[in-house]
Image (cartoon, rainbow, N blue to C red; front, side, top):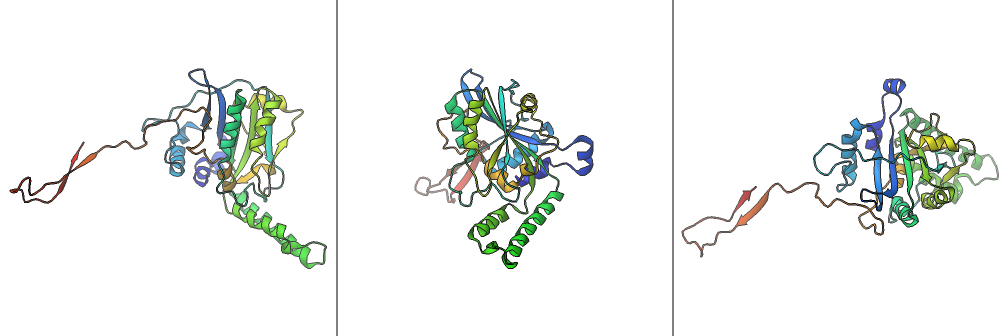
Amino acid sequence: MEAIAHLVRALPAERARHGQPYLALELDHGPGPSGEPEWSLCLRCLPPLAVALDGALSAAYPDARLGRLAGEVPQPAPGRAALPGHVMRFRKQRGFIYPLLPPADELASPPLEAIAHTQASLGVPSSIRFTLTPAPASLEALARRRFRHHEDRLVRQERWGLPEAGLHSTLQRAELTNASRAQNRSLFWLELVIAAADRETCRQLAAPVQARRGENRLHRRWMPVRQNLYRHRFATATPPLLPSPRALISAAEAAHLLALPTARMKGVPVRRVAIPRIPPHCICKFICWSRRACPSAQRKPRMSCSR
């Protein structure tokens, strides 16, 4: 996620002229090329960034490619431009100092696996989109100042005779320790949208999305007036012009939320590619020479290479 942040983030002059580029990870469940329902994992980005993003993705997942099978040019996937019947948006419930990272969740399955199983079990077309817009690098210094200010406030509560435990509180120490894992990381604006035919389907899909939580959790945003606005903006994946401060997440939180499913994921109809990433170009044959078979050949075992 750190490499992706530096690839997508634009310079201040380019950001002022053309805007800040963004990328979106989409989890779609709907009819596939054969007409049967299948689950697909897509990445929406600018075409010039596809090759560079493929390199960053394959560095973390050697068996994953972006838009291609071998060495050909990445090809875009056909998109579904249908207008959804209902959308739900989410952001953090507390400030961006408190991360979404659970304290000890290394052995758990990725969150995308639970989302994929829920989409497949419902059996209706649905889409879940994680839109990430790299924040300016200056916000990293602001995040550190807010963290120090919060820590100093806890120390003052402890020393000024207030009825507060301060840093001696077990809960406060645990929250600060986990919050330090999200510091000194690149920052993103997160726009999480669930789109389906009706409100009940969106509510059922929101359960696995909100299941993973640490000192913070994803909170649903109520849109009684802007519902139709974000329904029409879902096809273009355009993030909001003025994001909320609670939509700010670090690269460590994004890596936890967007960890790709493992190969052991079963029960989800998805097409996989069985072609190895690096095909063998050379088959080496070892020819051992035996002195008994050929007494006149006083040679050592050699190796020959045939293409």
